[in-house]
Image 1 (tube, rainbow, N blue to C red):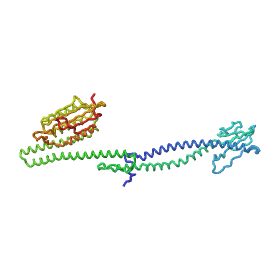
Image 2: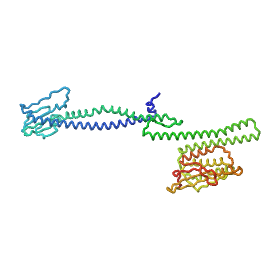
Image 3: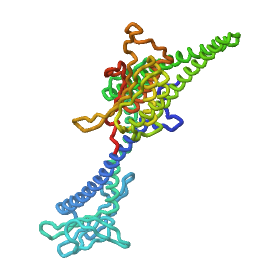
Length: 469
């Protein structure tokens, strides 16, 4: 059994992980911010160390001037510093050098490893190059109040820089240790924070579209409300579509089962040696059932074409009036043989935006349904027009097929004559409904204008129709 963590592992197709994506972006932002603070901390440490060194030089100079430490020294002495184990050269400024002069510029005392600086150097802080080869020194010189003694305190620049780097590194060192800890804590926090998303993913994966299930996540998070609502809407639509497909499949199976069973029965009867008249009747019944089965199969093919036409072809300008006249001309012979009257009531041209093949299917199915599900002698009319909305000027087209097949007939006691349908009316209407869905149109039974009794109408939306220019 695999754990939820294993189920969220990347698939062989290289699917990216949201957790890894968030962690990398969070760590990247953390490194940028941390690096900025480290850089600023280092610069601040160097600046503070330089100020500390300059302050130390000025303090030592003031201390020696006030203590008059060199007045009791006989002659000039350069005292070397005693090395201390474990103490760096810059620690506590052990390498300070001191030079002292009287008012006439005579050297009174000197201490440290620096070469003797010039007496005429300006008072205050100064950068000097002393010795051979030259070595950079940072110095501070000052006269006493009576201006009879001048003192200069110096420190090597490289030692001052080492002190600054040491202080700056000690300031940023905790951050170096803290970054991995923060990264680990951030990863754990992200994983824990995304736990509701993992639970929602598991709930979605457990859904079975074939079952009447809805997504009922246990995580009552506001951010998931729209996602759960969208998934449940899709499930409802899919389950409704599957229910329609099952009903259609059952109806198609029923429509095919009857003619196929009849064909098998009549074929068995022919093998038994029937009388000539009975053979003619059996052959006629086989022919009729074969045509009925073929018609159902043609309807299924038309339904499949209507389902995929939206993906296979783009819409174009279609003259619906010309198409209706052409389709009615194709069915004129069949209407004449039944004694029906087939007419077209349409403007000279009616241009709409749509799929020509699918609109042709609509007309043919509606006309075929009127021919097959009405008694002989029916008046069938194909009507269409174009409406212009008064508010926006946009155009909308509609077409309808009407018949008077349900009119009362005196020979049948004032009731409509019976009709022997060769197939179901629902299958043809399902095809028209699919075409209407592709065109974002509305299809259904409409109120029949006199003298008609039945009318089916297709309303194309305003955005789905356009005038030909």
